[in-house]
Length: 127
Figure 1 (spheres, rainbow, N blue to C red):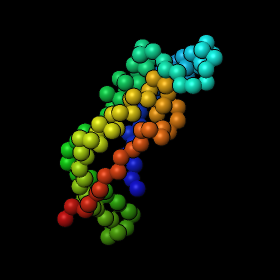
Figure 2 (tube, helix red, strand yellow):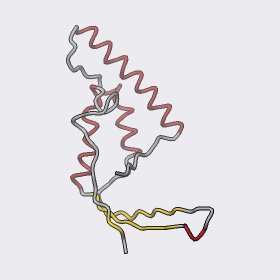
Figure 3 (cartoon, one colour):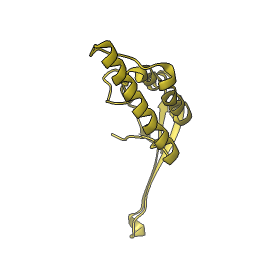
């Protein structure tokens, strides 16, 4: 299994952490006010930073991709390079973008969601 998680740069990480604190506080406040332990949702202005981060950092649009792995060692004859190809389908892109549906409740932000899972793609060596 290979993960292509894209980490935030410093400014996006700061924005994310600030938004995460605001979202947690808002959800906690709404739970305290309602007295319910069930799912509550934060208003759109609190969730908006997460939507913006997703839109600006999302990379996995439908299409054909080429992946090259190069391993260089201190023994040049042991170096190796391989190229692979894979396809991301429209339905996979949509499924990944659907993660934002859980943002108002903190789902897929505070915990790994059972509703919004990653995608598996078949990778084949390009000859």
